[in-house]
Image (cartoon, rainbow, N blue to C red):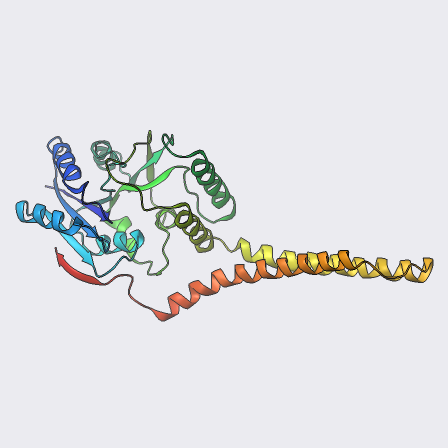
Length: 308
């Protein structure tokens, strides 16, 4: 019998663990396959790990990995990929925002229609703030225009993949990971399933606007070098404008005897050019920081305890 491995990154999800487990068990009663659930405790500060251990003692299909601290969802996903044993693997959030019932369609599709991946995407953003929805849509619009990969608007990490595709993902060893981009970059035949947004079962999301902005910057710099080209073009443009202004000042002084003056305009020009320089240095810093992190070759995660 084929087996599906469900990787569940968890950070402070003690209220959702048992609800998620019971929901998933009901789903697998309607599926003709075996399963294992790998909970990855990403340094939770509540009793998430205790709840997972209780389930693991009750059901030997429940496995877990516990990190020594919070390493982030990307590291949790990668750890699950390295440990899973199934024929297929999926990533699901414990808060039930990834509807488990879609797993039935995913499994039948990937088996019968010969896809390598069946992925889920949200077509609505119900109960999300207008600002958050606007920024999310703009992010997908921008990254699809400037990067070498295409990411569907509303794409989730929730997807069912073959072992062949996951092995390709594991071959990419970069530490600063952006999984949505990696899933697209490795290619493979993918089918999208759409669903309406579902609110969290319990608790609050740990993804603040600041974290989402940082994640977006990471995605853009991971799969596009356009910001570097923009900084170069800005440098060329500023040199051209400066040359033209110098020519105008010389012409006005020699022909019309116009004295060179204008302290306020000089200060504005200096501040403007300084801002452009800092902006370009910031872009270079983003890429340089990635090189710095990769060169150190630190592990993506450290396991405190596990049951696999």
